[in-house]
Image (cartoon, rainbow, N blue to C red):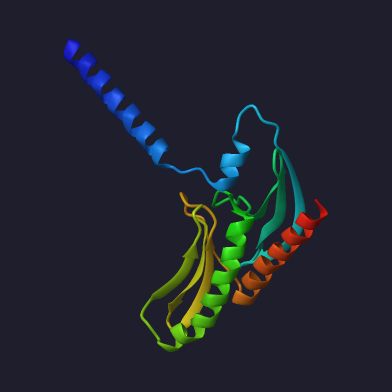
Length: 184
């Protein structure tokens, strides 16, 4: 009986250590760093933006989120709604990351035709932010498919209707944030 108790005690401490280690490895996103601070009042305001069309029907809801506090922060919020077959996912892209994504989209957009023309068995070209958001395309069977991955630690990849939709959506978000910044 003592052996069983000792075994269970060792097993539970090992499991607890592994869970704590996994939590330490998970980095907070820029939005989580701001919104999870204790002892501080944080106020959010959303400004709706047009949806981003998906390849397989529906779209992603988007908005600009202003986080008001000691200093204001702006995020491009992209949401894939929960459905009967999958959980919802949300990306919160901080303004400086949005600027870098727009630069990367220019580069990706100029490379996609050459990548398709090379007719690879499979090719993937993408940009990833510090927070784990990804945007890019893959080429297979002489066709490019654009995608975004909303969250780092989940199966949150969605396939987009066209590259023009993603480029115009991200560009419009940057312009809207810059407009909101001048009003503050």
